[in-house]
Length: 573
View 1 (cartoon, rainbow, N blue to C red):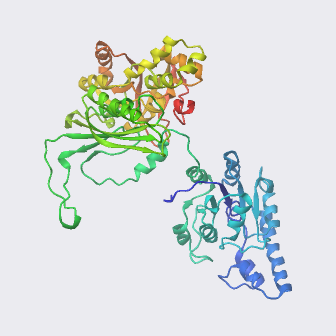
View 2: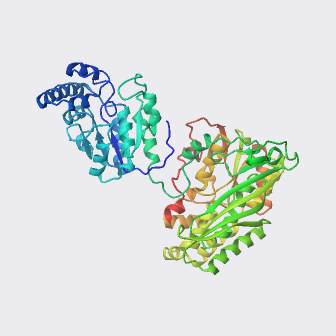
View 3: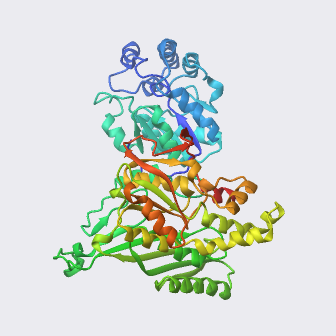
């Protein structure tokens, strides 16, 4: 599917009828031309409208209507047409038809559609209306006006160049339906290749329309969907030889090999490749993550979530840049308090706070801190998820939703108290913030020599983390649901608020993939350091496109593994 580059926000969908909602080829346009004396290559409606004699014009319209009705009587729904139209209604999108056909033939053809009729369309525009037909934009503009939407928010879907031309002239987004074959070159309106170049999207059939529609609908708060991000990253050109670990879904960090770095030199800004900087400089590990949710400790969170991800590569967090955005009317003391949190958290973990940007802006409703952290690791010490193999065990440190539990208690303490939690329980939950760092367990794991992947359990909870680590490592995963540990306080918070700890943001828990032979020893090493660790599953066979990445098991029997469109804390707030 060809994808557009300009953004859009969808408000309505307008379909061409013949060859788009109906199957192609029902009507013989050349036979019509011969019957009415229309020269080859001349658009039929325009030829009829150009007749100066009213009686002759009416006669030709009558002949045209006869052909249209005969074709309508034998036409059938196009592949995916009924599902496409019906699928738009639950999304709250008005649906219309903009056609060069007459209304009578449209209504007759719809009699052949199961579960779809004229009443299922919010507007039907035919050549019976006194409007210039496609490729003029008039029908699109008229339909948009009737629907009360901006033409730029309309998706015009058709199988012919006139549909694309009309949509573009109206400022709408256009979708060209290939119908699994390209029309012959030189037909009226140009070639299919010409139309495809002008269309925003080209799809094989209407079963693919939902992929286009999705791109114009608002997303819920939370992470950008993995499948959409994955498509973008797959097309991302990264030719820099120094980029050692390239961007992919589920990859926490980028890694730069300094020995492969090239220095741009030369006059007038020309870049000139030179030899390696040094074979001994090791690897730089780069990470950027924001703290966007409301919290009373954004500075500390910003340091920890970035340091955690750097540590999952086996690296030591070294230098932090922080961009701090504060809402209008913030006081100096509020801003300085957040900056002090950054300073103190960096000092606690041996990280240098080396700069950034601080700003008061109307663009945010509460403090937003974006960290960019750099770490270092020796070449042989890098932990890369591509090292995962079938049979590896999966170990989880601490328990589910450390960060989410602390965040909820800090933001919704009075509500939890009203729901029946004691002040002591709420205070224990608030204190979970002290456990959000996974640096200690990452150091133990990295030194064990048996680890193949490390992943910080962040937004989307363990449910999302397992999918991400599987995608990044290229393997399916089996999780033992009855082995996954949950703090009693977390279970109570989630029960009172109706949320699932598996989908609750969980920084503070480290997900470890390790060789099966060393799993028990690693768990013992972590336990000896005072870090709770639990074997919760295994790595399965390599994944292929379309695979379900994570499968659940409970008491030895298959169990549904949950998926969360947004993090439970985002849904809660």
